[in-house]
Structures are given as C-alpha cells and as structure tokens.
Amino acid sequence: MTSTGTNFSKASPSPARAASQGQMPQETKPVAVISDFDDTIAIENVAELLFEELCSDQGWRELRQQSRDKLISLKDYQERAFRMTGASLEEIQAKVKEKVTLRPHFKDLWDYTQQAGIPLVIVSLGMDFYIEALLAREGLDSIPRFSASGEFSNETISYSYPYTWDGSGASPLEVCSQWGTCKCSIVNGFIQEGYAVNYIGDGRSDMCPASMADHIFARSYLAELCQEKQLAYTPFETFMDVVQGLKARAGVEAS
Image (cartoon, rainbow, N blue to C red):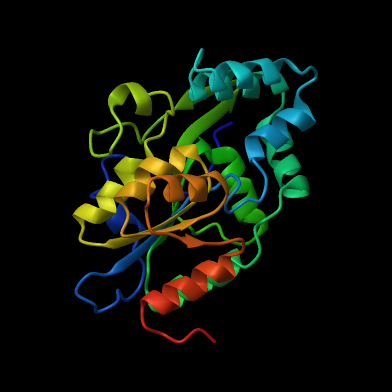
C-alpha cells in the first residue's frame, strides 16, 4: 500500500509555488515559514518512538549508534530500522496517532500563516507516512511537506527520495547524501522565488538550511549551534513563541 498525502514532485515549478495559498503579502519581500518535523512540530523524535514501540528487539539501537558514528548513513539506519518493525502502514500510523504529541500552538501558527497569506511548509529527514498520520489526526492534512517517501507492499517497504542534494546549500554532496532529503534544496527554492525565509528547527541537520534563512527560530541543539556560530536566532519552546516572533518581525503588535 502506498502512503497518501501531499508529495510534490521535482517537476513542480518550485516548492514555493507549490506551497503558496491565497493572497500573498504585499511587502517587497514576502515571508515564508519552513519547519522541521521530528522534535520540532512533533515533541518526540517520531521515528525513534516507533522503533521503541514496534521493534521486537533492540537491534535498531545498534543501527542508530552506527549512524551517529558515521559508519552508516541516516537514511540506511531509518530504512533498515523501519523494516525491523515488521509493521504495516496501518499499524505504524495508528501508533503515531496514539502516541505522538503535537507541540503546543502549532495550530495557532498554521492559522496565523493562513490568515496572513504566508506559505508554511514542513521539511523532514523522516518519512512521509508518519508525518501524514500526525497531520491527519490534527486536521492539518493540507500543510505541504517535503520528506522521504515509503511505499508498503507484500510486507516490505520501498523508499524514495524526491528531494535530494542539488548543490544549493552550504554542505557538499558527501554530507547531504547521508541524510536522504536535502532540506537546503527546499529553502533555496523559496529564496529563489524571492521569499524571506523563517526557518524553525532543533537539531544538527537543521544547521545548514537555517544558515541560509533570513531568520531562525531555534531550540535545543540548533540553538547551541547558532550561539557557537554567532548566528542571530529567536528561541522557542512552543509555537506561540514563533507566532509572536513573526508578528514582531512584521511590525505587528502581538496580542
């Protein structure tokens, strides 16, 4: 069975055009918001939560450590660990809907961007089938997302990576190829369309796309990296912090 949901092909004119909805702001440089998913929109690392819940043994932890030690790529770790679950698409998505927590006020961010005509998209190194499950549970199916894709058939999962390295980011191919999905290619698509990009993230893989953005909303390890590299950022713990930050940057008094 193939997972369903928004999945823009590389033949699309650009991520920005695919994502924009309604009346765009009239500023000289319109705003776009791009957010990471695991540990950001979802409070948990959803992939690891699923491995904990569904793997019959702890072999996935060895794969995770091998990935951290750069003995295997992140995408190899994910592919092999998801196969180890032996779970169907329906079982995985049911577990997401049961266990995963949406970070507070993300719906407020979605409402604000829709009212303001600001494109909001999700970029993730994770898999479309678990992103879609959380968004479906929350009634947020219409949010565009860019991630790896998994297709379930005959008790196996096949993987595809529509958004790979295109040379536009700060990292070389040998780095980005380890991730599978290149977040920088999505950020660059918006930049090329003339958008001022606000990037939201938490981890190491967010540093490259965040460094390309006009402004960064950061928490956890990404915040530490921004401090280390002396990059300006706005800290956040809930998405109300992001909404208020966007309003402040737009010169609108936060209510």
